[in-house]
Length: 168
Image 1: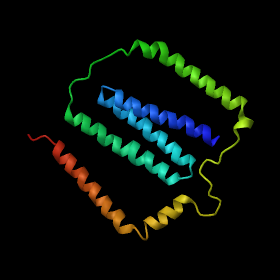
Image 2 (image 1 turned 30 degrees about the vertical axis):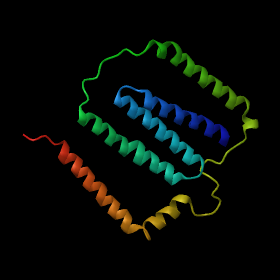
Image 3 (image 1 turned 60 degrees about the horizontal axis):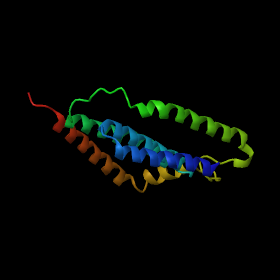
């Protein structure tokens, strides 16, 4: 089951990365990057790095992508053209997605015993979890670098707001 999860989300991450490169509109590229970041978060989670997966979702898929979209809107790359979508997406995309969903559902349901089971969340068998160990180190030994990073991020946000503000 671990191998199946890896293959599904690995292919999804590579497809999202290729779509990121091939898109013409910057907003669509940013959304493709969100797909890549979420796929990586699932891969981290399946490897037992829950904190890293949560950080990937919160920091990269959330905050960094908001900054990307903010910069795209700030640059004002021009007015978006309204499109109805491509015919290839309607002819091949929807039936293809339905076929892949049905195929994966069939494989997961009929070959459940052959796939085995996986321990989502890693192989931590002791009492303390991955998150408690990282938080203990982060808030004891690494407290000063953590706070300095917070101040640097705050200064960067204030700088971005000051640059984006229009003078009257």
